[in-house]
Image 1 (cartoon, rainbow, N blue to C red):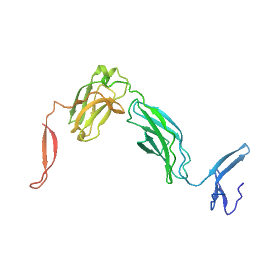
Image 2 (cartoon, rainbow, N blue to C red):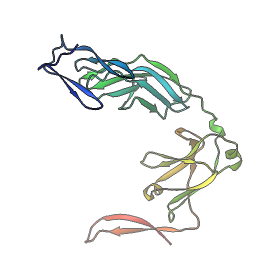
Image 3 (cartoon, rainbow, N blue to C red):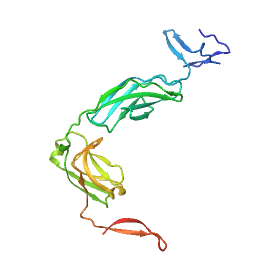
Image 4 (cartoon, rainbow, N blue to C red):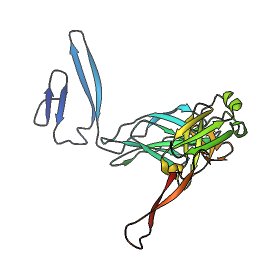
Length: 263
């Protein structure tokens, strides 16, 4: 039982109470405290543990919440944070580690039909916890063979509209029930993979991308390394373009830029 003194004091308001302990002593004050409440309808109690600040506890109850051919989603139960804000490091095969402040995480762009070992550890200002026991998770099989992905019949660039047009083999597209994207390979830049839901369409792109498109291909959505045959992109035939070089002011200054203009 707590007796009010210079060491212990209690602050109360209508909805809560606070126990203030001065000059903490680890061998005397740390431990479990029972908080009891009662009224004319009944009573209740709860235990509260007071402990020193420390590294966080190891997370528990690690489970997968979703699996696809290219992603793994996880969740876990946080342990005591050690008295400091904590974050989590989620490791895939002891090589790829990602940090999150949430008690869940999703790995993407994984290999299909592949086993992965996953561990999690918590970290705060004072250090990190032990890693959880490794869980072994297998991604799903891909729902389609590469050779069965739709073929691109044509793909053209329209610089005036700043779009890329595409048309797929309609018969093969209509029989599929898997999400697809049009992968656009851009010179000296990471590729783009735009989700498509129809066998033909137009995708608007930044002009700097249009000028550097190398080729296109059809891939599984969210798995842009699993693709069909690539196809080069043509410039729209109803337009003619020529280069205009813009020169800096002053004699002998080098050319600074160029533009595509419609003829």
